[in-house]
Length: 345
Image (cartoon, rainbow, N blue to C red; front, side, top):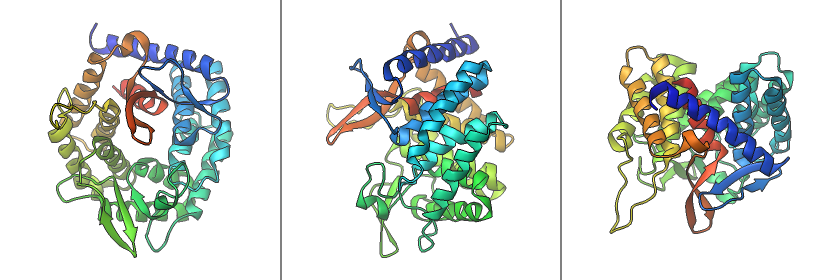
């Protein structure tokens, strides 16, 4: 089975898997499931992953046009309201993917539009004028260090949510936040840092730029959004970020760094997030055919390396399940971006 047939089979396998997960989680959000476990870790509020579970149902409803799928998307989206006041920039993950994309796909959906608007205003209110952006915030497990940390992960949904639903004030803040991220997190050769801790207004580098593939993938997604919203001015840094990714991790397998005999597990979620970034960017920057080709190669590699087309299970998200325990898990976030890439291709 090859090409579009395999992609279509994988899409429907993911839909079937969503039904299986929904049967297990009831009215609680599925957070993650280690590959060796049968049961999901569940949450009443959903944390930052909950929006992706609602987002999966919005994407499914848009594909099937089924009234039942849309009703489930709306129901999961409504449950996210508990996170509106959570002091975290990761609310933009929750309410862009969990609410705003429902309004984008179903324009007359007033509930999702209203929820996205409330979220944009709440995030806008926590903007730090001295920083010119948002720190991670103390919520969703970040604690006090989060109030001093600038992080790249939520760049794309923050730009999209504030530009789309935050009014003139939110739009201005989003653009400032983008500039702040470029100043502190980006390098002139395309690699991005995931975090910097800000002390007395100065960025203290916490890691080598480009050292974490998913952080680079989030940066690529953010820069693709910057090009969509603000145009030509961000073309060069966006393409640089993609070129750096392709050189370092863009082969059919990630170029894992080996320490002794230990090979870190491949974070396949980074492969599909970066693929979405390149697919999006290929639409906004004409003539860059290599972006589409690279994205296609990466998604095909993920499908070839797994049995997703048979089971719908994507155990490819490298996730910290304990203080000193990082494992590959199945998550709504990774599955969302895999589904998004399959639909885009």
